[in-house]
Image (cartoon, rainbow, N blue to C red):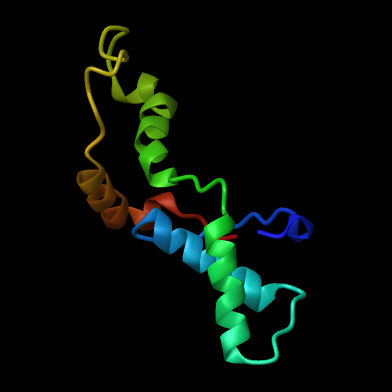
Length: 108
């Protein structure tokens, strides 16, 4: 990455770190201040940026642990249980949230 590119922060939904890097580079190219003369130049700029990313955070890996910490008191009955003797089943949590979305979500 060019040292003049600065910092860029965004969030993307992806199946892998590589896909997240590619999607972020594409977003940078499409929303940035850089102009391209042709598609080849556009693709090359994206390729160069994907090689230069330093920090990609996999929030999905952290999400489960964050939920367990956030809801420890409500989910686990005593101090012993709160020391990660239980884990949240994310598939079942997704089902519960989907079934109760009207109760959970509020209009903005």
